[in-house]
Length: 237
Image 1 (cartoon, rainbow, N blue to C red):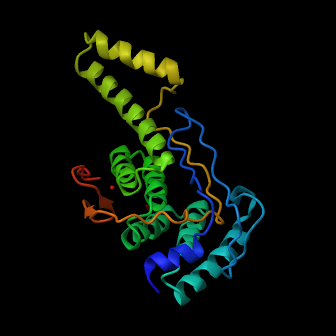
Image 2 (image 1 turned 90 degrees about the vertical axis):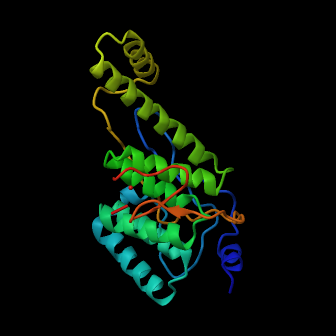
Image 3 (image 1 turned 135 degrees about the vertical axis):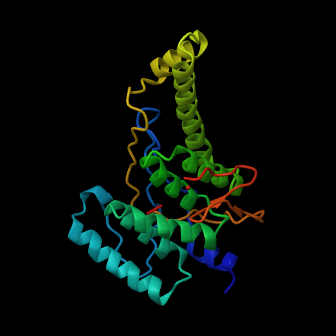
């Protein structure tokens, strides 16, 4: 079965927004809910992941592990498994899972988004930027990636202005810009303070968005990077 037919079969849902709250002090992004349920052999909880205890999450993970083992090309099971790993705090494994998804399905923006969230959580803003830029390139019509990238650019801009002030204390322009942006957005003093919101395990990759994806170039050893953006020597656990 072709990849396109596979996705059309399992992704016949309405357009879904995958939540990525890169920085709570920049914007509050509500996370998406899955419209129709997909019965693929794994449990479909009726509450948010934050309401699950560890034992229930681990039970869900076991089901997903078995399903992925039996059907390694099941993108939905793999995506939900990565989400559950992130909720369990197993970020390194989640990064590995999301990275594998970006390599298997480079035309889908959601794995890039979630991968960027994990790197942003670690303060690796440049890696997060590269991943979001790749998501935008993969799917220009995916509004959430555009919005998240804009937030990240603002954060990076503030840090650049602060760095300029540190290098040149008499740089009143950079100082003024920093003050204006922080006042406008109510940024905290501490840099890289991220709040990554949970993504329900039932959230699936959006349907019928499989364009003729241009070639994606691997810029690092752990994840794809989009030319001409070159990831610094720093870009999911």
